[in-house]
Amino acid sequence: MNYRDRWPASRLLAAAVAILILVSGGAVTAIGFALNSLDKQRAVVLDQIGPARRLVIEMDAALVNQETGLRGYALSASSDFLTPYTRGIEAEENAARGVTSALRTTRPDLLARLAETRGIAQDWREQYAERLIAQVTENGQPQPGVGGTTVGKELFDQVRRSVNQLQADMTRDVDAARAELDLTADRLLWLCIALGTLLAVIIAGVAVVLHRILIRPLATLAAQVREVSEGDYGHAVETSGPRETVMLAEDVDAMRRRIVSDLKDLQRSNAELEQFAYVASHDLQEPLRKVASFCQLLERRYSGQLDARGEQYIQFAVDGAKRMQVLINDLLAFSRVGRITREQTMVDCGELVDQVVDSYSEVITKTSAVVTHSGLPTVRGESSLLSGVFGNLISNGLKFHGEQPPRIDIGVERTGKFWTFTVTDNGIGIDPEYAERIFVIFQRLHHRDDYPGTGIGLSMCRKIVEYHGGTIWLETAESPGTTFKFTLPVVEETGDKR
Image 1 (tube, rainbow, N blue to C red):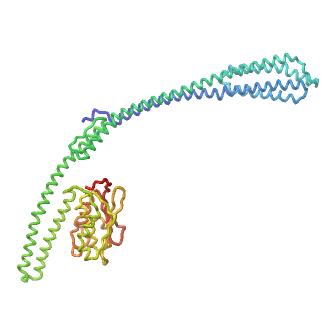
Image 2 (image 1 turned 90 degrees about the vertical axis):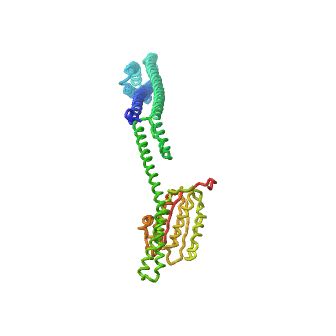
Image 3 (image 1 turned 180 degrees about the vertical axis):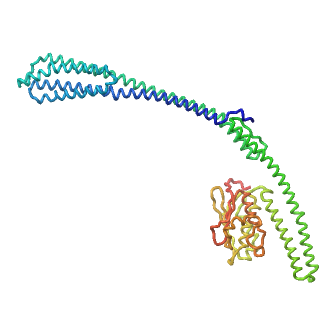
């Protein structure tokens, strides 16, 4: 594997991100132009032509009110009828100003037609309406025919035609603006659909490319690492892909090679340890047995000929040799845990504890002890090793008791994927500061003359429990007495008890 001629993953990711940014930028720009055009068309419809057309309709109504008021005044000579006329003129002025404000910068042609319409309306007022009002006011009598009704009608018809034409022009412009607005909205919709489709295609393409150049090599590397982690240390780890992935594969393979080398060293060390165990169990113990035997022969041969101190020295030698044998045997047993393995089977902890209790029946009877347990589960493990855990904990409870008869209670509860066993006694207890020291091999808290033993029992318990995938600790919050807790994995019921 040569990673120097490969692209780094960071550059590949940067290229993919750049493509997405360029496409997204183009999409945003195009949509921005479309939205700007849509906003302009909306302004034409809602802010310019539309309001102006409504004002022209109001101006038309104001002119009609002027004509109606004028006619009523001419027929009745009552000044009340002039109110619609004067208010119509005011409404016409307001509507014209509104139209002018709405169309000032965009539609000069419509403003010219508006001015023309207002000129015709002004001619009608000057040539007919104002003269008729003056005549009726001067005479104080109705003047239905004064001023020429035909002339007034012709002039006002011109006004109405001009207004209608202005309304028609504005209606046509509003319809055209609405059509353009709908067209722009449709264009924007299709543009969004097209851009969305394009982005989806680009993202899918980038995803496929990234999968081929990043995800697939990583998945291949993960599969090979998993194969090595499952025990196939001879499998070489290699993969293709970007520079970082290839470098990672080389590092993992280098680690695999180191593990293989260390494993060989470990196997060689285990072989040497096996040889040492053989020597310790045979060659070393033979001289100890001879020392103990000949010391005992000296004691019997010269019994009564040595003084008390000489006999005491011989007893010390015999006792030391025997204790050395016990220590060697315990050390060998400790070294065999996890090294010399047997097939793990389903172990009924209830039956196992009954067997342990039965083996201590003499001590239990002698001390009037009580050992209880309930609901202990079935776990997978080596029966002889687990028996050693319960045996050591029960033995400690029987050994380190107070004035009251020993009482040992064994319980269990499930905590997730583990069984948590609790072994509680009413003995002398352990100071919390020694919670870790007690699990160190050959560590004792009491003199051997007070309590027999080598101090390896709890070390054996920890090694056995950890070998079975659990942990063990001293529960320092419990008092009086001593409480040990340890965990073992839960085995789901499958019907297979082997």
